[in-house]
Image 1: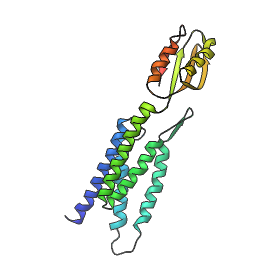
Image 2: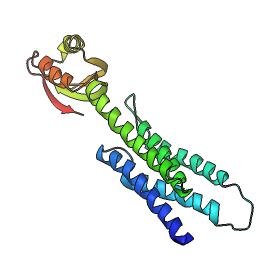
Image 3: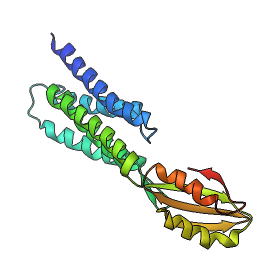
Image 4: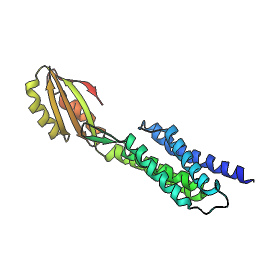
Length: 208
């Protein structure tokens, strides 16, 4: 195989591995998906190839280009982190972009077993933690309850706490109660509906 085709193979493998991680993020509807991860991995591999082969006959340090790739990913990762209503989102996706950049650099350097192993470990970790969080982790839920008796909000909050549902914040406006609730798993959604049935005229209008 000629050197050109060997380099193209490295780019192809980098994009494929980055796309695998991106597919998992896309499937989970995260802030950065398949295209972003694919481009990050491909670009990282290309920078590695440029640092290794673009300046033949000259002494150069390939690690310097790799270090700049890592610095650049920091700006991209910051763009997917969102702080909204006391909740930070996107940190795992940002870490995934950082990891994909490393995978792309490894593939660009021809370290195929290492890059493939790192990709598999990343996807397995994301899937395992998603399963754990879904069944055992906590989740902050935004909810709007329509109630014709807003003066009963304190009783409602106590009932929610008794059911094991944590109340982060709440506000009342024009017959509506807006709450941020912390729930551990899916079963608490059913308990939420059960608690609200205890209050006449209370019904969920929005749950996210």
